[in-house]
Image 1: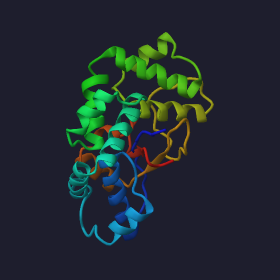
Image 2: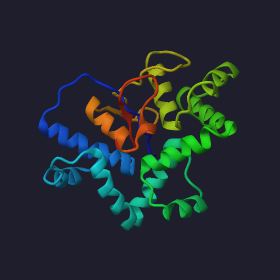
Image 3: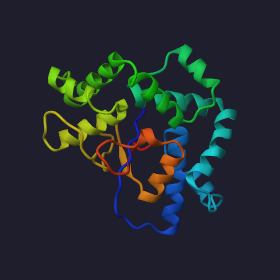
Image 4: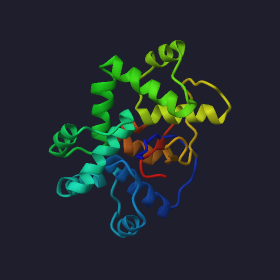
Length: 222
């Protein structure tokens, strides 16, 4: 099952090698909805130079256009992370011709669907409650979340999972736990503030977790 991506802020110091890995993984997250594999990391450690996340994403966009398999998996990740379900054959066919990154697809799904159609947003909220708490949201819970800024399915699951780990039976906006490991299908990880800002600049605003900070919940972290 694909995951979703959520970003937090940690006050941490990173060495040069770590910063390289963050740039690489940040660019892969924005582009493909996953982190780089070990072989991809090894390749880019010797080739990233002084590139920013945004500059790396430009390179990955060309790769997406030329690789049908990677493009399809990116589209599927965006649907699973935004809605909690797979795209239809027609949706997959349409987006395969658009050359969009994961972050661009996620932005479309959240801003042009969940944020526009209340029934879609409501369905995703209910689905996330069922996934984490094993029940549907109550009327009051649904009213609360419908009144908050719209999140992706992955972000809702990360939020609810954070509350469940604290032995709470419901949830509200909070900082997402940055150490979730395949928790209800979601894993999270922390970027440094500098790289988180580069992720946003590269179009990754909709991977930022609600509740403040700079964390990520990403598809390739399990």
